[in-house]
View 1 (cartoon, helix red, strand yellow):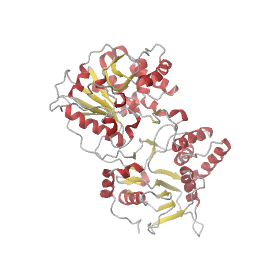
View 2 (cartoon, helix red, strand yellow):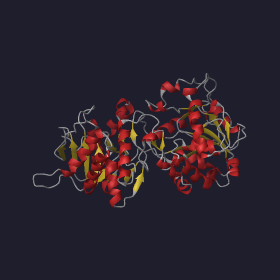
View 3 (tube, helix red, strand yellow):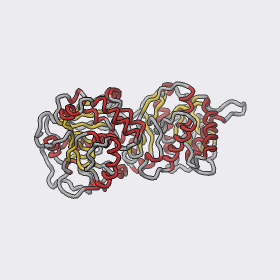
View 4 (cartoon, one colour):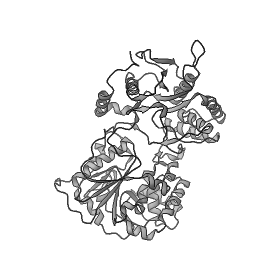
Length: 516
């Protein structure tokens, strides 16, 4: 199969991304045909690469230029009138990399989310790229095509057969006056393809590396019990949330998986379960006292930031008019009384999909948290077990929860947030015995390297303070391995990350046949 690269001009890093990408292709790709570089091919490419110069459009908008370059590449011909690009290609940006052996003829049709976002899915003003996704959804819906989000940062199948339909879509966009932000190219091509032939889509979370790049490592010593989440996702309809967004990003079933915990056979004999988000840090052996905390409700959670809670209370009433909205709770750290939940919700397996449908219908963004606040009997949990740096007011902090949006800046955990909560004066050398029998903790994580890096940090801190006998359950929709993902892409932030640069130099330092 041919591979088509679209390369822009004025690389900030002398096109080192393209060198690495071509080296990864030469190292791991099977069944590779020609390599074509359209746009601004650098001078160092060898004669093994087909070059198709394409000038940027005058408006300078990135996705206009990418789409124009793809269309121009499919239409380019040699002196004999033959197309320079095959009818079927694997499209790649210069910052896409293979990390494992891969047969290009069997490369999956990866997609990112069931639906592209809408404008009000974002809590802040959308970026130019996010606006292109919003406009792509408007255009596809206007054309009666499926607005699936195919924009994950990875290689994508493209076909010349879909060029006429893409041209029709662009003409429709002009008639509708959809504006200057353009459209996401792969979503247009794949929507056209899905309309004319059956494809088997494979959902894969976004695999774009930023400054949080962390290599997979051996897990610290704990009693791990891995849960294959896929069966429960199917049985309880958890994939319903894929049509919504989570803080501006597509929601995934793993973000609501905790709701199904009372129904899982793994927890049939568990009285109380401690659930924690992956963006937590364990600072004291006293965290385990959360499981011994006596509370009257079905779940115990910390009261959320009052300003944020006030905004959610009205939404909770739309889910359940009888809900008590005196307080709004954060579910990032939660103690679940599983027998009481099962007793009070005998039809939970049927209720879960119904509740999620209500959230999707009202386009709520905190689905798991909103469902718990609306339909479960809640009790307050002390701040010590869910200490959020932005709202820390002093006192002990057994579990620190990096819940603010700026946790995504810099390394994990961000020092500017971690330093807001003081560490204990004297480190605890020995973990305290558990105050309950069969203590258990649950994490839920998808396959993205960033998410697993955050969880790895949480597990490293947990291993230092965990009591003997603690069972650590990790629910995931893909194997939890110490291997790189099959493919990934990068953002500019990784060039400030020595660990990433060392990894790339170690794995992609040898020149390949596509370089002079």
